[in-house]
Length: 365
Image 1: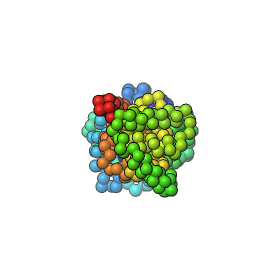
Image 2 (image 1 turned 90 degrees about the horizontal axis):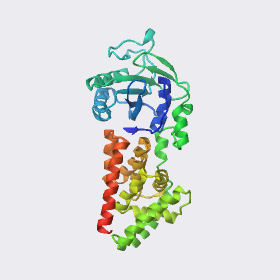
Image 3 (image 1 turned 90 degrees about the vertical axis):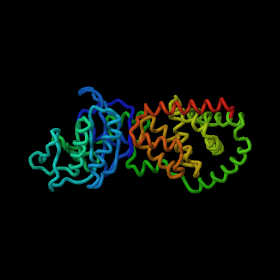
Image 4 (image 1 turned 60 degrees about the horizontal axis):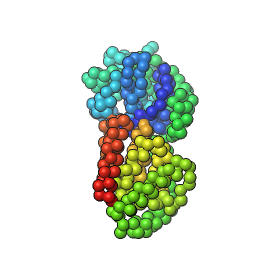
């Protein structure tokens, strides 16, 4: 499951606008997916909570998935309602039924073909009802693109999707510098290794730098120097100063000290959060395994804390492939899977940073 909670204020007035906004809520254009968005607040002043995407389940898994999501991340978010969107499949007259708010299955208006996966929506309606939550709307579209049809399972309305690239949320995110990728595969490619040649060169140079650093590991001046190396690189990135390969390698060596890495995680809550995230992304694209894991976990935390669950998810996948038992990676995976929001996670990050600072001061490294 990938989830997101974009920190933007826009007004979505009808189902078509929500369908067009889905790619920007997720960070990519989904295919063959179920989208779950929680709602908060009273009618007329409703705001979106988290948005999560899962693969459309096989027929025998539909009820199980609905129960898992409702009892898990949806309930933990304490919403006043839930929006669902199904992306994928074709209209068919083959007996699938729409599910209106009453919960009683009826044919689509006028005998028109009902959209696919209506049974899945029915299972969600039942699971939400048992949890004393309401299904505000459930929508379907074969794909999210300009002019694609959409249909509302709950009231039979239908229409055409406006251009997602021209949606209010797209404009707001563009101003903030956030990119919406054409697919999840292209999003994953953004954190993929730059080249085998770069990784091989960095691996050889890292071995030499780490050999030089090892005799001094734990010394007070070494730890202070490592902290300064990392935060100086963040400040230079914020000033748009180019970092050399030597600079980047030394940041990577510094992050191999878990106290320095944990302290650096706090940059995601600072005024230089964007610069720090840019630095982590550069390292993720260039660093070899297993050293890439520390930079990737910092990228994942930074992305999640600013509400970009999709980028956090693909960065975390790199951590898990490289170092499955990474402590911070396991922590973030639990947050993603259980629906812990950015605000709650930020408390954990502050505590982690405080612990790292205390260890550095107590042990004098």
